[in-house]
Length: 364
Image (tube, rainbow, N blue to C red; front, top):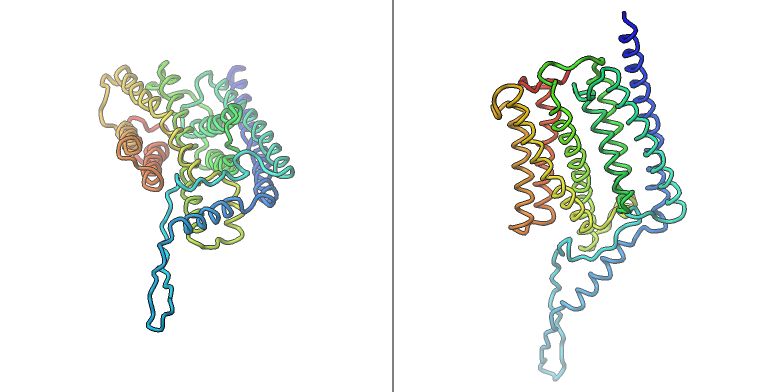
């Protein structure tokens, strides 16, 4: 064994230790986020309910049909009231305030929230160093197999969240689902998908690896953030509809839903995130085609990875087109967005692991 090889093995081992360490820090961040959601919501619970109850009462008063007056034979007058018609308000018309989870909360909840953000940032730094160390162990980009894709993907996803916070965007509500899924992603990476540090297959020896794969991972991380917002929108929209129709959600549902922004805010957030990154996804596919021309002598061959990348592009294009032209907002658009993200997930995991093709670099 040469000294260089031993040094590479030491770096690879160091990378593994750092990845496990980041998981430990993310676990602490998970508990801090849970504390914020549980203890930080008590003084603010009921803001959505109060808003919807007040608007429902005003709508009922303004929209009540006039009473019908009937003259009786004895000269008396009987007043008959028309039955009230209850309509379902669209999410954009409710004017519901954002919950405290959108920007903090009471003093106690804000303390837990700040601890959670600090731990998430620390976990991000530790994981980032783990990814860089993995790259140094083989002196290449750390995207040669699914294990390396996963640890890089989760790092970028957390980085997107922290960048949104740094830009003063009210996305603290994203912390708990983000850290939860990052822990699941890293758990899958270090168990099922783990691959020893090794050199690249010949087809991947190209500067296009840095361009094409890095943009694909970044786009996936942003699509993931948009998908989380879409899923939470569906839950919050159902919650608001139940309140508006006079229903009474359970205590647990109320405590959780009141931590989230209004459904209208979640809907707009998801749309803007997906729309912002879609041009970069388009570039990713074009860059992949150029790389394929250099590596295999053809720009497009309907390889499974190429096919599902195009299907994902079509799905997101249909979602954005429906929002822009057909006026689809709310739940119908949300379902389209989730279908598009499901296509991306299958392209990311399913094609690499279960389908044989020129892009079969899973390493498992």
